[in-house]
Image (cartoon, rainbow, N blue to C red; front, top):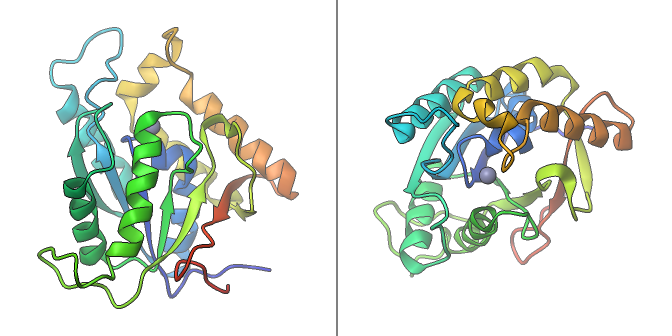
Length: 236
Ligand SMILES: [Zn+2]
């Protein structure tokens, strides 16, 4: 079976500035190639991930890095503007994300898996799921009108694949250069590769897309699981 994303509007909802690169950039690139509209929503600013040589304005640096990466991909970029480590499911955060959904009108949302390692990832997961329901509910008022129907939702692989059972794989073999170039935009994070509390991201990403590719019989893949909930499940 070969998925074609031509008719989709695909939105990746992630916690931190470099999460989309690690977990779904290849799939977004493939959707873009098929003719889909694509966007990334980053919920946190990345303001607490300082490299060992501290940057004076880390938030501004990370915003520039995100914009450069989204430009390479040709994706629209939405920012949640939360401080790292503070993201939580709350009524105001839901409304903020509901409004972003209503502006972009995704048909398919890619969200962090509920079992991912980082509290911000898990909070983004809960919010992305809640917004996928309430975006089409007229009772939840935001500036833009309610969507006609909720988008489908796929859970993304976890960081380092821990505890995630893939439902299916997307072949991203054609987009490895782009995915790698996008990650390279995040120099402030790549500089943290030798920190004891961090990981060499490029190597981690390569191991992950090669492993998922090997499991699926292709050079490289990203793994997902469909969220089979009322009105979010879809026949492909
Ligand atoms: Zn993250």
